[in-house]
Structures are given as structure tokens and as C-alpha cells.
Length: 202
Image (spheres, rainbow, N blue to C red):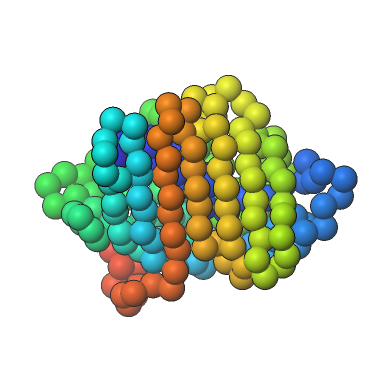
């Protein structure tokens, strides 16, 4: 999966907005809950159904979020790789290669990254500039529907659906070309201490 596609999926991890249709208090409560989460450890299973393939592409691993230190998307299956992002740098590591990109080199890519940070930290004002968002359900079982408002986002997604309670549980992403991606989140299945050091250093 390309770096740009991976980061575009990151946008979908958690979001909320004060384009709050008529003062939507559920949306505000979801935002307040996410604002206090500066550490996040989640196991993920991602299935991506491409129009040109009969079977979905499945990947599995661990997501770490560490506030200002950034995000680490650690894939364990089918092959091991790391994608580590913060507001200024992106680093991708496999068993054969290592690549680093800066915000100055790829401003569009880091535009996606900043939206992802805004989503994880509950910065709803930032997200409201880019998405129209509707909240449904309750505090313990909510659904957020996101539709991109800007042309550069519409190149990648037409709609995203987020489901959660205390934390995000599932994400559904509909791509512009008809591709569909689903990501399921759950408690981590490995010790994150070693992985955290590998991702962010000491």
C-alpha cells in the first residue's frame, strides 16, 4: 500500500466537528472524550476491497498514538513494516528499505497527516474546515458520518463512517474509484513497550 493511501486512511480513525448541525451535543461529548486521549494503543485488522480484485487485501498490526510524538502504524501481517508520522517527518521502514519524507518535500501528504492528528486529539475546529460530519446514536454506541468538503479530499474518499463507544471500534471508507476499506480496532494483542521504543525511540 502506498504511503499516500495509508495516510489517507489515517484521516478516518476518529473525527468530530462543530459544524455541529444545530448544536449537536453528542458530537461535542465525543470530542471532549477524545481530547483527553493522548495515548492510544489499538490492534487493527484492515480489509481493502479493490474493484480490480476478487478478494480483499488484508493487513493486521498495531496502532500507537503518542500525542506530540506522533503516530506509529506497525503492520505485522502479511509482512512487517513501520510507518511513523509526526507533524514534520514521515518514516517508513521494512526489512529491506527505510525512507524518510519531510513536510517541506510533500506538503499535500502532511496535510493528510495534520488532519489525522486533529482527529486523534479531538480538535474539532480543524476537522470542521474539511468535513461535513453528522453524529448518530448514543455516548456508548455512536456513529459519525463524514463527507469531505474540499476537492483535494474528494480525490480520495467520498464518505467515511466511524463507529465507537469509549474509543473508535470500526472505520468504513468509500473511495472515489469504488474501492472500499474497512478497519476494525480492538485491544492490542502484543506488549507495546518494545514497539513504542522501535517507533519513537527512548
